Image 1 (cartoon, rainbow, N blue to C red):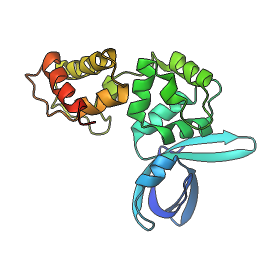
Image 2: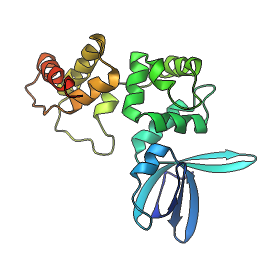
Image 3: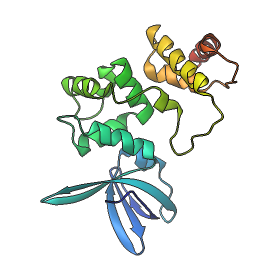
Image 4: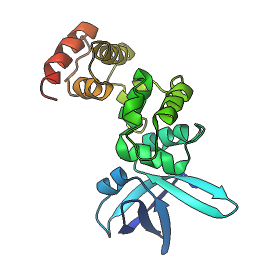
Length: 202
């Protein structure tokens, strides 16, 4: 129903945002991680929203990026995970970390979210492993540029996969690769060597 709402922050709690838009205050359910990133009360913010309509409820769920909203919508398609569970997962890990946990089959990382057990985490991985990609972690859909060639994007993804194969966690591998200053002439081996140097500082 609403793609996003842009207005003034009227009130913030750990799991709820009151956003004033044209003198109307909207209650928007949020994750604790989003609550920590919101601007102070009185400042303007743009919130991407998911609308849940039931016979006994009309609820809005809010996110600071379209990327977070997109992964949330995928998560809640999994049997046994509703909007509350989706927010719990995104409170415990970022969208990038969640994608990598799904790709690498890291059910343990996902099950750290409140109310998400090991079996539910495994079901989420099974249902979504073909619906997410490592490439999504490197490309913000709202700020996509042509600066990086598709070959470089592929090399970054392969480097992350190689690091996880070496035993590093998916989230640490992603952080290391993201910290590298890349040039168009770099290949997988170059990126992997640079990433391994970064790993010692994580």
